[in-house]
Image (tube, rainbow, N blue to C red; front, side):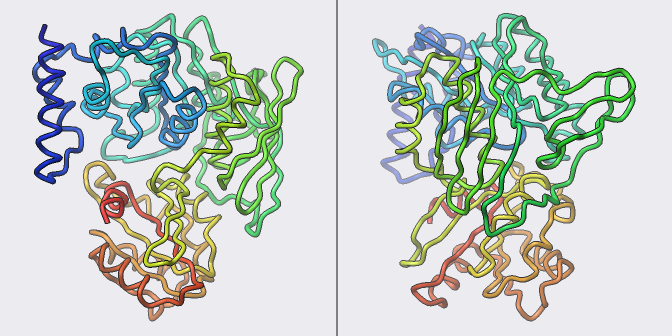
Length: 435
């Protein structure tokens, strides 16, 4: 009874907030959990086929967005990336109806909240994308993040795991009876940018405490690794892929059970190729055919801020979220240096208070920027200092802390045929979304 009461009150509250033109964010979900603490437990019965969680440091939003788009229209998904308990409850509170069911749930889940989520819902699948240093004030070192994900997995022994074999930390999460690995065999670059990756790599030891050796390293710590001491190596991969990267898209050749399927995805960067491989692997595991997957990929539109193109005052604008050293360094590698660049850095809770990651990210890749370089957000001046030390002349850097003013200034200053690249942190991205 409390579940249905919470459902009704949450929906009415959301409608009232919309009428008042007040930001709704995740308040409906927060209210649902306050009224019915077990709210999420009752949501599982509204999902008939598979309940899928996606977690990891980078790529959760894109992976879950791709997967939700591939699976069907009858899927419940936290599209906007609100991935803590209140955000997840919010999407169910606003979409569940008493007699309506969904085929699938694809739920992006914050690493720190995964174990709490599994207290309420025993999911069918868990996809883990990667583990990088991120928001040190929240997570600390990677050992802690790995531990909380492992603790969550141990709560659900029937969970089917879909793991990135190329990430040596993620590969050790094989703690249930059913594990599927995905990974790359080779990466080919046909792009304007170099294949060399300056993404900072974590140093990992084998369980025998000997350092892992790489025969191939794709970016950061992801690649083919082995231990010279005990013979441990990257696990055998169930879904093995080769990727060809182009400036505006990439091609994946995925081999499973000795059969190879080819896909084209209109996204950029190796990081997105990993996201696509994770999503396609999960779709195959749920019985979706290759042609249906490609048809869905053809109509996929980027989730806001994840390699998404918009037009601002008639100017073509590419928006790419940055939030930690490994992800930011890979994004920076793809930036068009002939575009006008805005870097918008906030340090709110959702971004991480600690902005030392700016110094670990490879902003040196912007040193040959040809046009406007504007820093914005709460840490606009910190970002300006970082770009100065990255090799950009101080007189080329414009500081405008107000994000809306920064975007307006650039879009009104440049010519109609010029492009804009915006690199925001998470809460800066939310502000841009409102604009």
